[in-house]
Amino acid sequence: MASEMTEMIYTIALIIAAATVANTYFQNTTQLNNILNVASQNAKDAAMTSLKTVFAAKISDDTIEVWVKNIGTSSIDSYTIPQFDVFFGPKGGYEYIPYNKMSTPKWNFTILTDDENILKPGDTLDIKIYLDYSLTSGDYYFKIVSNNGVSSDYSFSL
Image (tube, rainbow, N blue to C red; front, side, top):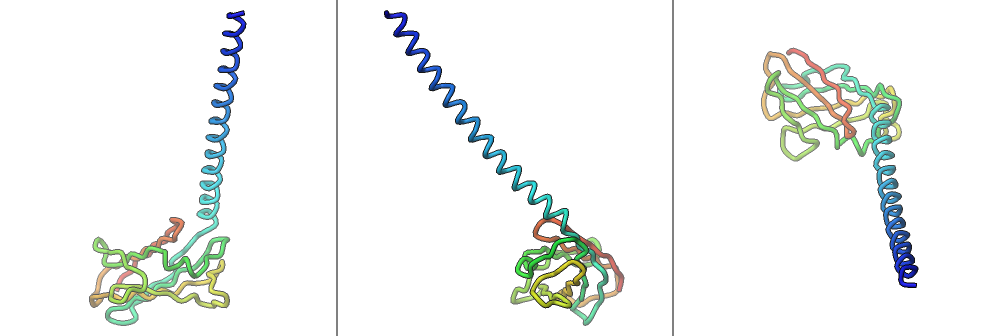
């Protein structure tokens, strides 16, 4: 009788342990699946986003205008564009340029052919960079990085 009771206690303990292990396994599998879904969506977004810097020009002593085309297959909402990182400066001395702050340096943008506040595939982004110094002759570097890590750069001389 005592051995049957001991065997029953061991069986119940084993069932509880197995249920606990199975529950932990399923929770971890669900979490891993969620992480993989997010990573897959981020990779898809990055694959569908592509930017190409078309041209850059000096428009005043302290202002540069840069045109960046959306050559990807997905549209970019205008509210995400201020989250882009912009870098500009002489080669070897470029710096991060913040979006539309009160003082210079800063940058802002207009979507050319914009009718919906969306940078659609084929649309061009017109970026103006306002500097806190005068531009001189030399080689300059521009780089833009989207909020999902896709980038385009451009080098030019004045």
